[in-house]
Length: 299
Ligand code: GRG
Image 1 (cartoon, rainbow, N blue to C red):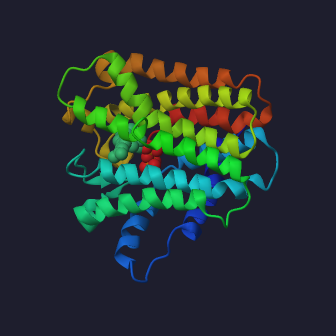
Image 2: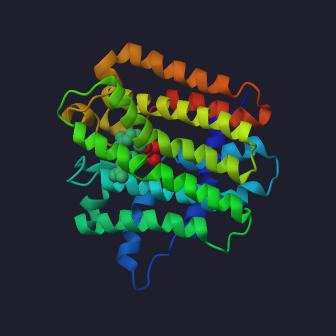
Image 3: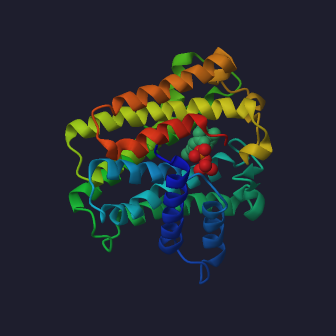
């Protein structure tokens, strides 16, 4: 039986050590700005996106050197994700005080610093992706990965989804609109995390197609569970404000379907993602287990 907790602990350590090494170091002329970036990056986080990237790479290629080559990509994904959380928490957006169990970036450093910390993390991600010192991946793969991540993070992905989400607050929304928001705001970066690992590993078009479907499906499961936890968990358990969706009058899966049906839908999505991997060998076991973890997680 694959031990997902052991796997996650090992990969989290790997990612966090790499983040610490690769991230701009504290001190120097930009000390306060770098401190604000490092604060949100290191106060917690499940590291789901970087781990998906490493797991997808290992699913395609057994080369033990691949993980090392993928680490800058994995770190770039976590930088982009962390920037999105900092900006999402700002007063102009969700206006939250708590993230990853600690005061949000703007509560700690002020709004202007928080905006710049987010900008810095987003830009630093592309610094990492294009850094010529990291020669482990072929240039063509790096270019394709960079484009995949940029697309997913930008206006046709996460940023666009956030804009739709903001626009929808406090008004009736159709289920179709909710699905578009979820797939762009949350799903796109999750799928890009899976694809970037697979591209780095030299996946064939057929493998990339299957992993795109896997990514889209766990992205959906991830967001459904996020909606669910917002109504079923406490602020202490989540490390972020529980009940925030209802407070902002947001359309969510539980609001459309109720808690029990929503739970079943998350289960179905997790199962469907595992089925997509049916033709993959044992090297896909971490991806299979991650699909279960995403629906069984408690924060
Ligand atoms: C501000 C451009 C911009 C985008 C914001 C990510 C996002 C878009 C908003 C965050 C709000 C939210 C609850 C999104 C839904 C799912 C999600 C991204 C949850 C947080 O991700 P986790 O659970 O967080 O992976 P950790 O802290 O574990 O990394």
